[in-house]
Length: 285
Ligand SMILES: [Mn+2]
Image (cartoon, rainbow, N blue to C red; front, side, top):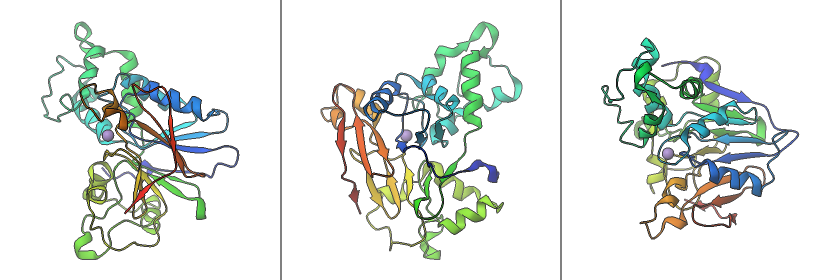
């Protein structure tokens, strides 16, 4: 799956502000709340997403529709990847007899069952609205590089950890590695897998020494109550969909996090709470 164009480069934002949003998972209304709170200006501000727009929450297709907006930039998450793999036979043939997971991708079990609503059994296909969402998901990059020099930052779904860190002594990929991929060097499959699925950094307390040379890298994928930083990775998945869980006594500690890149502060919106929590603390390990 080598395709260097799947790393997208964007210039600095000279006009407005840049924000990064954690795993949306269909929680469109929490996003609206956050954008209202910061007076997000669609004419000059930009919103970057760490991926996983879909599954588990109530408005997956609306979240995918954000990809139509000129101010919205998202990387593919493992949930988009699972959806694409699930629908791959359909993408090839254009026909869909059932929604059974014949390729065993796990997509329906891990929150993808919302797609049932858009399955048109009589036409043996998905609805047009769904098809356009799926087409946009296919076109998402796997990494964003935003800005240059000191203001450069990256967006990736899970992590930029090297697969052979134990032997090479290099834990994370550096800006110079990423620049080589942009220039056309092949990205190995086991490297790309970690962009989508890796949890080494966020789960580990023994992550090796800090390595200079990796710009701030926003990621999601691994849930905790608040944003936290490990090496140059800043994980902002704070479990938006968990705040929907009425049976979890701690559900209101979770929510959707919006990170203001320049001012390094963040806001969290939670189902069941009317106020948006504003905070600056980022746990660092
Ligand atoms: Mn996720």
